[in-house]
Image 1: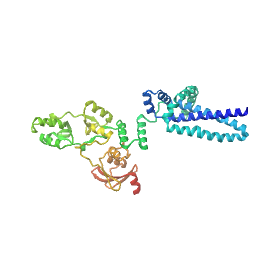
Image 2: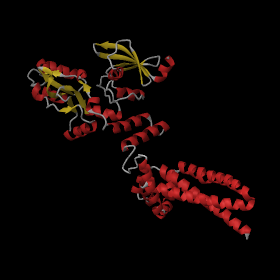
Image 3: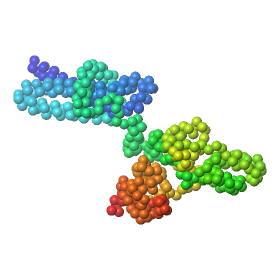
Length: 428
């Protein structure tokens, strides 16, 4: 009779350990599973994926029910084991029961199931979801009471337990996932930059990607038709702003195709061309316009070119559809593009750069992470950090990089030498 009761107790402990492993593995699988993949499976008709999504939506309730079940079976298994060892070894059985149950629970009810679950989260989540749903419903009254006590206790110490409070926005979660997969080798650098560029469109403004007015190519109406035709033919651009009397007085945008059609109609005679009549109306946009809004505006107006003005209406530069697309896919060049040599690698591992080179372009080209919020150009970043306009030869250290001013024209830094972190540390 005693042997039968002992066997029943051992069998019960064995079953309870299996249940404990089930709860431990389920918790890991359901918290580690890919929500995106579950949504895709549910959309494709998987009922189990739908159950997983329902459970994940009430994560606090889910974790509460699993922990409740896990603790119940673990405590019950330990209690039964203690009684068995007390019968067999007397008072020393308490020590034996503690050692044996700790080993069994750790290996077979915690490490083993969680290791499997973390390596196969989606498969295990789909497998356990129907059973866990029943457990959640069965323990609902108890978990609701526990949640109430926990929330009230946390509020007493000033913790935020609002369900609507999110630590990360959807964009930040996507960006974190992209960076993680890139670090693990699942996403290459080009794809990471492209996906990151799409997410950045809402955070960037037109002023950050525009061509500054100093670098704009423009046409003066007063130069006469023949000179304007020669300038258009020598230009790599098809749309060029046209001004009269003052460079800030933009009266239109001349398209090379319109000019060529007019020339063809006059058998190449440019002397009688009305350049002003050929130019299309200029479109002005504020420099603070978010890139995603400007992209949509380009699509709606079926236009590729806009002039950028500040809050006072002064001309700041120009932006094109290509400039915005390049923020996503990187530089787009064709046979007519003029290569701008703004980045020059040096034999010692440093880089000589033009002061007008955009920080964002530099980060993309060299996979650096210099801050892009403080300034648009690399010269602007150095001035912002130095809190002064540096002299030629001055060296500064910011963000692990060393910046040396090579050339300066009046108050503008025109060239810099940048030593990246590893080279900088070696030099020190």
